[in-house]
Image 1 (tube, rainbow, N blue to C red):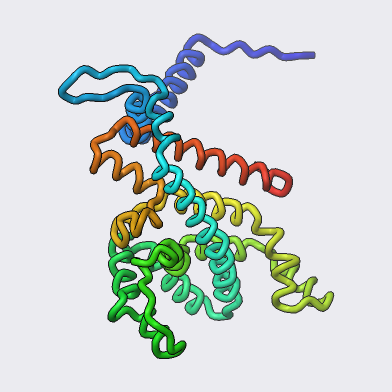
Image 2 (image 1 turned 90 degrees about the vertical axis):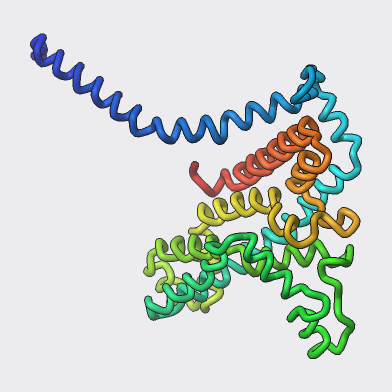
Amino acid sequence: MFRVTLLSPIRAKRRSKLAARERTAGLAFIAPFMIFFSVFTLLPFLMAFWLSVVNWKPLGVTQFVGFQHYQTLAKMEAFRKALWNSFYYTVMVVPPGIVLSLLIAVLIFALQSGALRSFFQAVFYLPGVVSGLAVAIIWRFIFDYQVGILNYIVKSFFHAQPINWLGDVRWALPSLALMAVLSGHGTAIIIFVAALGGIPKDLYDAASIDGAGFWRRHLSVTLPLIVPSFLYVLVVSTLGAMQVFTPVYVLTRGGPVYSTMTAAYFIYKRLTFYADAGTAAAGGLVLLLITVGLTIVQFRSFSQVVEF
């Protein structure tokens, strides 16, 4: 037999009030984030899209021009060069950076002392806390043609002529990539160390019993089990590299001869130097579409081994 329990009107009213309070509390908690998101993310995006399809004149008549700014971008060699430099920079930074971060994380996790682990994690994470502007200024002295430490090493140990790291077309962009690889992956190291801590020690013990050495254990056990963390680091690193701006602004200003002109710096230059808000907004949306496309490709590539 089924028993049907009817709620009294008073109890039903109390539950209705409780549900209303819960909804109000939920809205109150998410309101600050929604306001912040709307003002600083959603509104600027909508404004960028609007600027990309109009000929904006602050003191004149704003006219709708459709995709004219996008057509202008397609014809600009400087924008194509900027996109190519962004891709090239990403290729030079992301794979070596991830490999180096994972290698350092493995070595840190292998330490027996917890105090040493914490010390080295803090040391490698420190550049991520320091302002990107300060890091770029420090590297300016490292790359200096006359007194830079890199040229000192080149002259003292290799007995070669000093290299104009930031003033030579062949070396400028690789120099920025070198700076990023050596100073910009502290967060990735922390993430990988945390991922290594989540792997059961029994799996390593079983691999050791089967005769696997140090590196073989990590190839067969570690890599398959940290794929989610690896994917996260890959996506975030790619997004950051495609949007690189601060080192270019501080060290090279896009030169020499557009050799370090990246997409983000191109957008900045079109807006500030040429007061061309329409082309700058269109360039920003093109960069957005490219980064979203790369992210989708990366997620699809790992869809068979990572559950989303």
